Amino acid sequence: MKRRLLIAWIFLQLYMSTLSKMDAMTLRGIHLLFVLSLSGLFFIDHKKLSYVFAGLSASALGAFIYLYPQLSLTGGRLGPVHIYLGLAIILLLLVMALRVSRELAYICLFFLSYLYWGRWVPGILGHGGFSLYRLCDHMVWGSQGIFGLGAGVSMSYIFLFVIYGALLKESGFIQMIYQFSHRFLDRSQGACAKMAILASGLLGMMNGSAVANVATTGTLTIPLMKKSGYSSEYAAAVESAASTGGQFCPPIMGAVGFVMAEYLSIPYSRVMVAGVLPAALYYVSLFVQVHYEAKKAGIRGDLVREDFDFWDLLPLLSILCLIVLMLMGYTPIYSVLWAILVLVVTMQAHPRRKFRGKEFFDGLEEGGRMALKISLACILIGLLIGSVTLSGFGINFGHLVLSKLAGNSLILGGIFVMVLSVILGMGVPGVAAYIIVASVAVPVLLELGAPALAAHMFCLYYAVLSNITPPVAISCYMASSLAGSNPWKTGLLAIKIGLVGFILPFLFLLNPILLGLGSWTDIFLPALSGVLGTLALSVALSGYFKTKLSKLEGVLLFIAGLALMVPGQESDFLGLGLGALAYGLHTRRWKVEKV
Image (cartoon, rainbow, N blue to C red):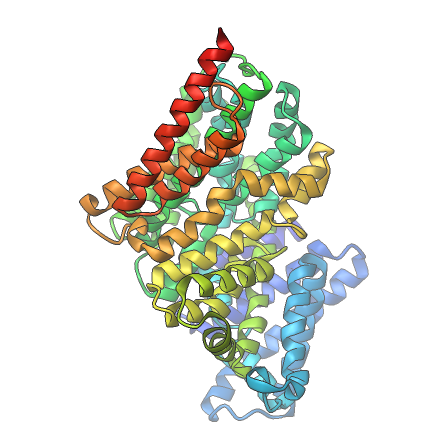
């Protein structure tokens, strides 16, 4: 029964996202009705309690859908029934959040409680207090709370792309990546780690959850890396860093890019283009580091050549269709619907993986389960955004940072926003983490003069990278449980491996040209110096080139890498000079040791 209801909801959502002409609040109400009810059936273990919760959720949201049109016609004045119903919806949402995403539930509870105890906070962060009437009016019956941006994006973009990602997985997408890796990586050093990076990055951009990505690909890649000679901590750290990076990797960016496009009111293709160079530099860094780590540890080629089956490349046609349509200017919803259709049709030609009934509905069920969790997180974010807008916390916090802490320094303001982004994003799915951070931190960067796209990308990177930032580092905990490694050591290694990701946001905050804000001739030299800087920095982090780097060589390469990554002729010349010096010293020492 649960499976049938879930699949029925998926088809209803497809209709609502494309052909329905209902008003936005009714569509979002129906979306939340199914999300809460089905979450109760799937995520509450006690059978009777699950049915009770599902029934209460369906009743409360059904009443909301019935009462909202009448309320809007009467000027929006709430009566007792509206207040009690609003409180019931908030309570049901929080109860389910504690089952599915405990960390996010605690964050939302903190901000909700702030609406009460904030009246006693002195200074700019305090407020005058809010009644239950204002709370329910803003959070439930208005468009800035539960039924705001998070619910809207969840209902349309995120839902469709999560389903698409699940169908891709069911089509053998992961196996295709492994086949591709076997074919082209073959026996190169660190091939298993490179395969893990490729698989985790490609799958991560589809599913939007770093933890789910680690759990999916890590079960295969981590044992292979350990078997080839990497330590347990290193294998887990590579998997964590690669899975996390998928959430800011175009073309899909874990569906976060669609939320950003909504915020900025720009075409998604613009966001996608902006994410290309930073994501490429991040993954180049990962590949270089695992390569030289393999050389340092004496890990030889570790993939056995297998026959390559070109039928396994069929899922790529679907992805190509998606990218081409979005670059042509079609909406993400239109593009992903065509991508799903192309995937289903082309897989019928596969001699071994035809999309018959069972495979198709298994993919829908898996996608539906993932969509429930991510949709619940996005809707729950409405409570946080509503608390921020109702209390004025976002504006007041920005004023505090600007007037007391950062002054007029974009770098200093960026550091405070970075810390805040990492804290607020800890333990939260990528889409939800970005929405939380953007609602609080983006105004600070805009006030300091940062371009809007750069400010949003800055917050996105640090919100996502909180997945590998101790003490929470939820992706690292998942990977370490699979690898049998120390979670704290895994987290620290993941930061080292993903260090380029922590540096990049400051670079495109200071020089947005790295986000493609300029002509190709303007972008070419900064991109080239960024690649050279990433290579130098990655070699320095690995501590090995032709032989083990000395401390002086490592420091010189590290500084050279940073200088090359910072756009500007002076810094480029400095980086090239220091890099040449480090290379000369290293080569001379290597020749002496070789003799």
